[in-house]
Image (cartoon, rainbow, N blue to C red; front, top):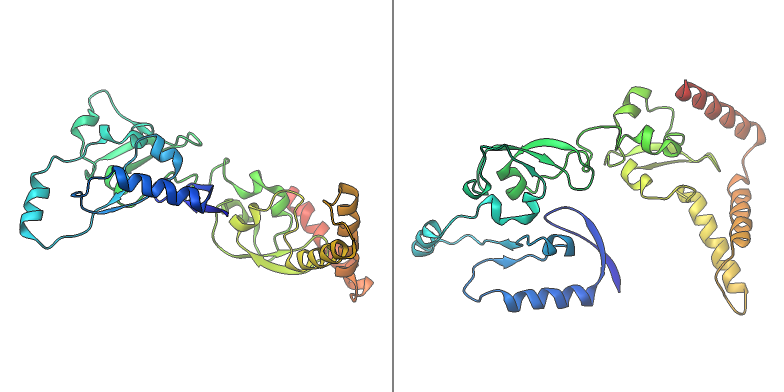
Length: 269
């Protein structure tokens, strides 16, 4: 079975089968010395190829273990290939002399989006602090919801002001109300979850339920089920649309449509 995993170091998601991940974890345990303390944490394939170390140290109350740990050599920035790929050092800064537990604030450039930010080395290592733009902590043209997904903004309910819309990102975890443009039914969802649905996809729970039921009935009625063609999918979508609009007065639908079109003109202007 292929499932989604999230890396504990770079917070990136990847798809992999469970058997493949278990095999990679067992292979990593065999290469780890038995006397090495701590729990081995499996990272994503990208971080492992860069040489990032995934090991969680367990606290020890033994005085001899604490003295040995203090006497052991500290890890430095130059030993972490993942951080070395993103750090922007000055000419007078030597990565081989900066420990990973340092509180020194350094400049970084995200390897995915190129965004430059400043953060301490300890926060990046101990707190797994990543790029503010990729995680939605700052709103920029690269992650702004009105710029990146204007089709999603068109479905946001009118109770959300235009000022608040300009501050939302495609990674926002705040739940906001939406209005379906097909059946005009309200529903709530986070912008991050809504943007994960591709353009043209069904996001409204009511439309999705009707479409799923109609598609399952059509597939069950056929003696030899096969993959639905594009024409068949359009017919099922139109049938689900008519089912969503059933039982609602024509005047109410027309009033809702006029209200949404008026709000569209305000957003465009």
